[in-house]
Amino acid sequence: MTIRTCHMWIEQLAAQSSAIAAMQDTKLMEEIIHLYHESCPDLLRDLLESAARRDAGAVYRASHSLKGMVAHFGAPAATQALIDIEAMGRAGRLEGLEPALRTAVAEIGRLTEALSRLLRDAA
Image 1 (cartoon, rainbow, N blue to C red):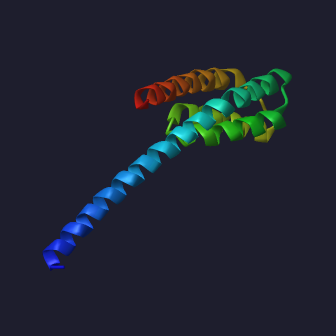
Image 2 (image 1 turned 120 degrees about the horizontal axis):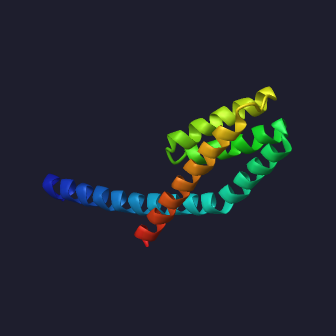
Image 3 (image 1 turned 120 degrees about the vertical axis):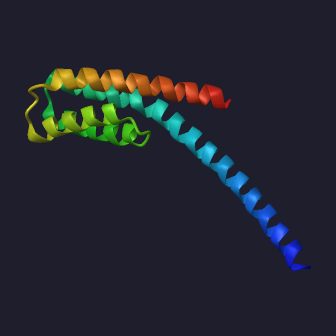
């Protein structure tokens, strides 16, 4: 095997590896989006029910879980609203909760729709 042949073989192998990695990344992303769609509605419902009960500890736990989920997808407005809600729940002070909840619900809705479009386009 000549050096040139060896380089060509390495380049082909690298290209194939990149294509395989991209496919695996796409499949992984699809799995993560499906997990989001399965989990997010329940977590959001838990947050809203906790807020209605004025249960600060439950508000903290639900917002913390949701925050991690939406932050993964780079949704800064939803993430910030959930950070604010989480802080209120942690402090046991739920004043100002409703505007933050409205923002979180609206932004999570936008994210959910964007992720749904992404899955449809990928199919």
